[in-house]
Image 1 (cartoon, helix red, strand yellow):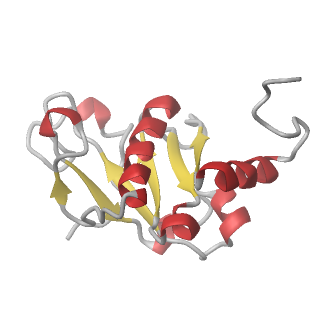
Image 2 (tube, one colour):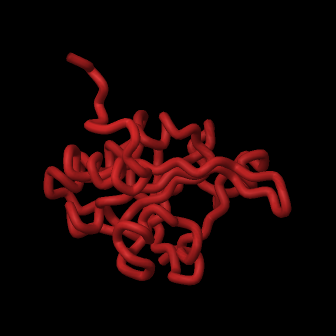
Length: 162
């Protein structure tokens, strides 16, 4: 008997993600940062929020995959509990110490080619995406005065603000 979580180690990637979605309702898909030709930060996005919760998929830039997965799990828990998180405005209560965060709608032109696993499972154009924007260590968001400038490349804001 084995404790391997996957039913078949030789499954192709999309089949593994499909299996994870069947088991837990959604999956987190990390994308590594790139340096060439243009520097792009790493990011992690969900696959399965749209079919499981009827909610847009969520992307988080600039955090290690394990940290992003934890935040995405908290969003999934809210969706699973029937809570509708505000879109397009700041809110508190999800992060420790009542730090502000927000979910911004990502325009379709920023979705193309960025979420290949979602495209493969949900169909290109078959899902919506929100960007989870997190604060710096002082609680400031990217548009606030005094935001940590070192984080601008790590967390580009591709979503739209109300």
